[in-house]
Structure formats: C-alpha cells, structure tokens
Length: 410
Image (cartoon, rainbow, N blue to C red; front, top):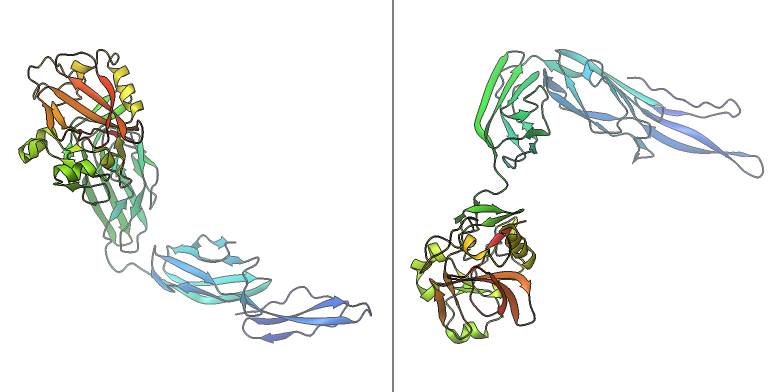
C-alpha cells in the first residue's frame, strides 16, 4: 500500500499527520483580518472492499467505496483501476462491478481526494471447478405481436460466454449475458435456447414454447378461472360470452341469493341467475345489478372493462349502424324464433333479465346488456336486442334491474 499527499502550498509551513496505511490529516488555512493563518485539520481516509475476493473465471466482483473525510462517507473524485478486470478502470463512486476472465492475482487501486490506496494481490481468480448449468428467465412470457421481451441469465458455473437463439425473434441470436428488447412479430409459441459456456465446457437449455405471442383479441379468463371467447369488432376486443364471474377482480365475492325485498332495496353489487336455476349459467351468464357494474373492485378481468356508451356506439358503427346491427349480433341458438345471423361473432344470447317488478322476463326473446355509463342517480344505460327486429335499442334502466354484462379489452 502507498499513501500520496497532494496540494502542498509553499507559502505556509504545513503540519501533516499520516496514519498508515491510508489516513491523512491535511491542514487547510484561512486568512484572518490580522493576516494570521489558522490551520484546520481534515482527516481523509481511502478504503474499499471487494465481494468476493476469490472468484472463478468469468465471475463478478463488486467493489464498495468506504472512504471518509473526518469520519463521514466521502467518495469525491473517485478513480478506480482494475488490472486484469473488465472494466479496467472506472470513475463510478461506489458499487463497481468487475469481471475477471483469467486466473491469477490482481491489484486494485482507488484514489479519493488525491489519496491513493493500492492493494496488491487483492483479487484471486481461479479456474472453473465445474461445468456450467444453463438457466434463464424472461420478464414476460405472454405478449402481443410486436411486443418485446427481456431475458435474464440465471446460469451457474463461472461463465465465459452465452449463445442465445430466439425462435421468431428479432434479433434471432445474441451473445449478451442478459439480452433485452427481443421483438416477436408473429403469433405462436416460440422456443428459446441458451448455450452457457465456461472454461470446462458448455451446457444447453431449450425451453420449448416458452414465449407465447397471442393475438390482441385472445381467450381471456376471469378471477374464477372461467374462460371466455373473444371477438374483434371494429377497433375493440369484445367478450363473445356473457359474464359469469361470482367475484370482483380483487377476489371479493359478489352478493347473491337475495330475496325479492332485499334485492329491491339493495344499493351494492349483486347478481341473480335466471329463474334461480344454475343450469342457465353456462350459456346465459349472470344477471347483475348496475351497482356490481360500477363497483370499484372491478367486475371484468384485469385489462378489461364493462362496455361504455362509447364502446357500444363503436360496435354499432362497425356493424353498419344501430338500425341494422341487431341480427348481426344475435347468437344462432337460445332465440325463439331465430332470424339472427351472428355474422359479427358477438353471440348475444336471449338471456332475458330480472325486472324491477321482481320478475324474470324475456327468456328466448330478449337480450339486455349494461353500459358502464350512468344515465342519472337511479338509472344507467343499456343495449337491448329483441327477436325479429333489426335495430338495437339504447334505453336507460333502473339500477336495481338484473341485466347481462359484456366486457371490452382496455
């Protein structure tokens, strides 16, 4: 080790106190009105640690600056040198990471405030002791076409190189340890391969179908684990089934089983099943009051929302207008009689509704869907389809009615 003292002034007589190996007391003078210099002592100390100090070839050492001025942390003007390491030098103040690729012992030097600490044979690098074991992860494994993925190497065994292959990716290969921004343009499941190498040899890991590139409008699951078909109409993805969930997005259960009086007086989220017959759930879905639609816990799956007036308007436009959209939306079953074509794929079932007269009505002849858009304090808007009509009707309904729900992707 060596200690260097800088900034000597010839005008004054200096008193330096040096505590080896790296403590320096420097005298700084200020001029008083009597022109008598006053000495102020500052204790500088340059120190650092490396973790670990013995590594295998290809492993990383992290260097931590522990330098002080008068006992307080002080890294001003830090300058590091790492012979045999990568990088060879750094002006980063602390937490510098260095990789060593060749066996041997290595000097490390740090200069802070002009005070240098050089530690000979501080880092010991040994040859790899075992074959590598390739491992990796990705920040996202389900993406849309054109989405990008970042990969993180988790391999062990003092690696010296990495060879990645990304099926369908751009770029298709990489030699970086942790490749980022790999773009997958086409739909489908993609294989990812990593060959990890150290001084003793290589190990290959292939994760088949690891990255799923799915279309924007793809199958979706609710909090209950129930899956829904999805259809793209205009610029939006719509569920092609009525919502069935019994829970909000945060897992909280939605109230059900209310008697007629409790349902009528209720002002919180609740649902019913048509005719209180659970056999109707799979096809017809649940009938929710509007308080469930508007609940802050979220009724639709993550990334989805209950259709708004604007969403319904966009759907009608995509189908040629509200006056002709009805048959294009109606399912080929559940209506009696049925003149629907379902050319849109919306698949509106004649699920009926639960009215404010405390009666179930409209099965096989009518479908109603809530809008998330409120009409007034006691009502909210709905989309209503009737058998043998071409028009969709946009009417407000009492918030205590039980009506079907469709979700739209955000």
